[in-house]
Image 1 (cartoon, rainbow, N blue to C red):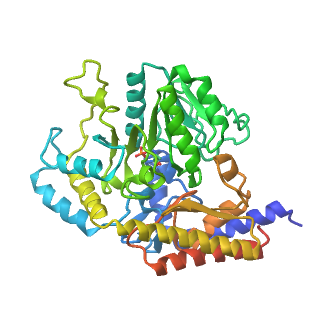
Image 2: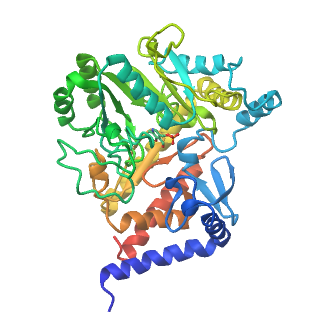
Length: 460
Ligand SMILES: Cc1ncc(COP(=O)(O)O)c(C=O)c1O
């Protein structure tokens, strides 16, 4: 007689076997990768249960794996492809740019227009500078805050993911890390998310509870030494958790009061929630914002933007104490062309945002109605076109709430999404302009049928 844990493990294994049976070529590609690449992946976050997706082609709102299985794409390269995969305007822009060379490492004529779009679209951006990833952008933003204030400490929120550098690779909740040793909610302790981080870097990072008033007590405790506070206005990787608007408003007030820079990490929310990103969506303007993803049009990209005052220590030629910021590939001709093509379309068609946000609202409303009618311990959350369904009753206001998700239902749901043709990252899904209402209907149906399947199997 099997105990219930073993019985449930067996059921999840049948889903894994079905996924592997429909994608043997993909599995073989990954296994071959393993022989020459650690874990067979170029990024930790490509690992998946039961094995990484191996993509052969991406078009519109869909991707195809190496076995030609078609998936509805709600990963979109981790939120990047807001116009859908392989958008025509990006292809045209790249074709135009290519004959002039792929890389100069120098200024060129097309940077102005790209930077101008940032300044025109984002309320808090008067000047912007480019780098090559969101990780670099948040690193520079913190350096700017320290240099501007002459103070040593920075603060981030528990659950906030800002990339992999040593200052911020702490307390974001790396998959598989221990949830039980994070300290009390009103005074979280810093958990380094990797061996090998420089202790002198992350130990100067204060951890604040997200959406929790104790954050303000901690800020006041460190007020004299705090250079800046970085926040994802909607935490993505932690489980698509929006900040409460009042919480952001108080954060704005208190950072002004203590003279620390408020940094919005808009790497996901930028050009996704609204033309002006989360700062427009919530109506709260930070000093500095960081970008990546959507704005790079599918190329490696990062950016730091802010008020002219906040950015003045990047005026390298006129400011004797300007910060070190440099990069061989910063703002190259291809990423500039691709990014400008995307931002031009988004600024020309702001109605795209209401459509995207309506699709996200529809997902949340229909799923939560179903959850309520059928009494599932689940909750659909998110903001605009960022969405996720947690296997817990909620409320979900922090990564600690998100982690309360059912031990078997959460992995079971993810396996069923994949088995049934959804390509979606763990903890945060994204919609794009190429998704149709029928695609959203299918997304909702797959969620409902996955819940029903787990209940009928006694997994949930
Ligand atoms: C909010 C946020 N900030 C920063 C980053 C790091 O960006 P990148 O992966 O381009 O280094 C990410 C990546 O997912 C992110 O979601």
